[in-house]
Image (cartoon, rainbow, N blue to C red):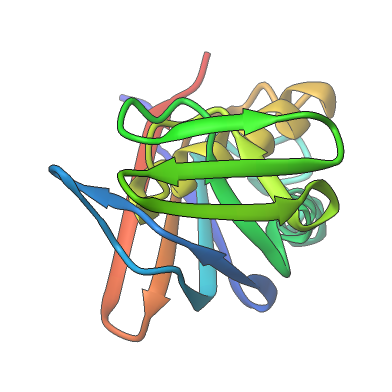
Length: 162
């Protein structure tokens, strides 16, 4: 039987402020924002140094993902409900009679279908996973990320690695 241990990072600097408008069925939320908080947990076997991962390594990977989203409009590029066009200088988003134009520098265009906390958590997990892979952290067997939109309201994503 394999014993799994875990490391969790959250809080200071694992947060981002961003605007979004998620689709809900045939509706589009009004444009609004959140002060998101991110929690990242990895599970795995101990290394020869007797730890799963250095807290700083995990924090850095999660923080870099948060920084890519901070003070941006989160655009769900793969939305099947929104009409989206970008020309390098701006993004235009249409939903029915509503039209929004965002400077490209203010947009985090994400390859997701909706800007829900669950899909944002998956996007962050992908970034953290890539950093773990690049760093050779093969002992990490599971990764989970929670994205809290407001206290008591979070969505999450978890997956096995390897």
